[in-house]
Length: 167
Image 1 (cartoon, rainbow, N blue to C red):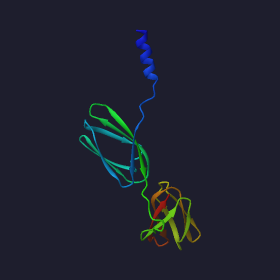
Image 2 (image 1 turned 30 degrees about the vertical axis):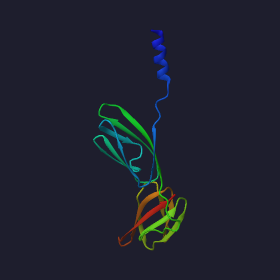
Image 3 (image 1 turned 120 degrees about the horizontal axis):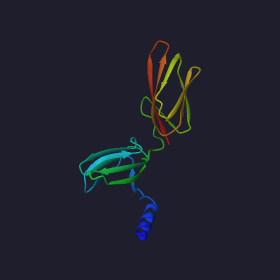
Image 4 (image 1 turned 90 degrees about the horizontal axis):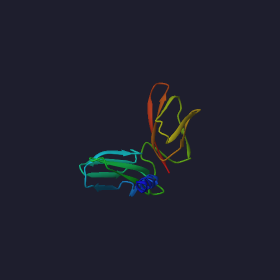
């Protein structure tokens, strides 16, 4: 009986099983196939991956570079955990912004003329900081991603500024 208790204590002290690594590239899609149907999914970053379960299959699409953990829970209660690493797509150095888009790097600051600016609305997602400065708007890249700002003049006319911040 003492030996059994010692084994139970020893097993309880062992570290939990590590997550299974899964390396992907941005825009890559993989299908994972399991022996049991997928009942539930959980992820630490739903903006990084698109997860589409269908029976015993799970389609995983990498949307952008980054890291996340994905928990797959099966119909019998068992689960597996993946440590997903997504490598960002390489973009040409000279790639300019799309029409109507402001592209800048993390830490970069740009001044945009905004005469008659009355209000400034920003999508608060941690990608960029935007502030009014005299007759201009100053945009600073904080983190890789996309955001938008709406500039409203004294007459109520709106101009939407799409912001893309590169790593």
